[in-house]
Length: 174
Length: 174
DNA sequence: GCTTGCGTTCGAGCGCGCTCGAAGCCATAG
DNA sequence: CTATGGCTTCGAGCGCGCTCGAACGCAAGC
Image 1 (cartoon, each protein chain N blue to C red):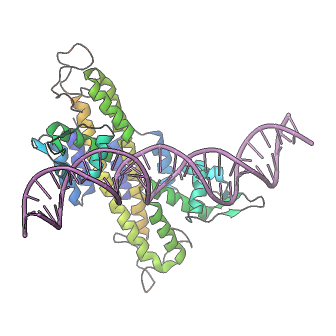
Image 2: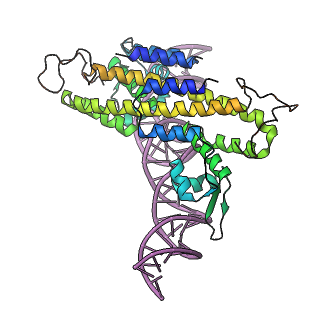
């Protein structure tokens, strides 16, 4: 499959790794190294969401979480894995209701796999569309930056004395 | 500059052009071919938003629009260009309040160009981050699709008779 | 023993970005 | 002449995804 390949190309193309990328890759590529069980604060930190949000997801029926003797949540590996999936899909833009439907399919058993697959395919296409949109937006912003005479600008710093006069922009052009 | 290059690579890499891409590129690369003036329905169609949304943007102070004798909005080329920019930035994820700030800078005059440039640079970085996130999500979804035995799956269609049993998933794994 | 801190439940509230409905005006079509 | 349709203003409402506050429980540390 072309997954790593694609990822490599994309990260390569984008350069400029933020602090996010590293953790994200870690989370992406190692869905298995979760401890036996975790408390809510640990899961929250792992997934970079708030405990509030985790409780919200549970209330929304996305995941079931056991309690210990004190009534505190105990996330087993399965719950954590599901939450990894959920937060990943949320990040990718999947709606809560779709996620709810998806997990209901998961809980309904193996015979729902075809429908789940359909959902994933659809989500894949959604992500691709969004990537295209964003890439276009990026180009637009970069073009605008260039014509502003920003750092990478081609020809600008012309006549004006100060902070960026001497350009062809009409008044009010953004 | 690497803009076209990047775009080409990105679109290339993503393939599978939707109906969106073509118009989007058109809108991206030709911000100049707008008519002398347009009515709200035309602008709405051009930008693929509702007239409601256009009125909302105007109320929000993002753009000023003249009226004709009947009180109907008349969008001149400048207003349309600004709205092209606005919708593009909205699509890229820029918040309404930031856009409001940006246009207030534009209206304040040339001396605000440095700050505007800063905003654009920040937005560029935001888009890049989002692209990285999305690319990661895409990889995750594609991986999941592959292990489901979806279209591009490597080894799946094994024992099960019907619709996709015979895999190693633990119960409840999404 | 008391405080500190993290956890619990429940329901309400919020920020965002639209989205809609009501009531009315005007122009064109039949 | 009337009806239809598209526009106007205004304010209210909505869907989403959290986010927070209140009131409380339990456990460990000083």
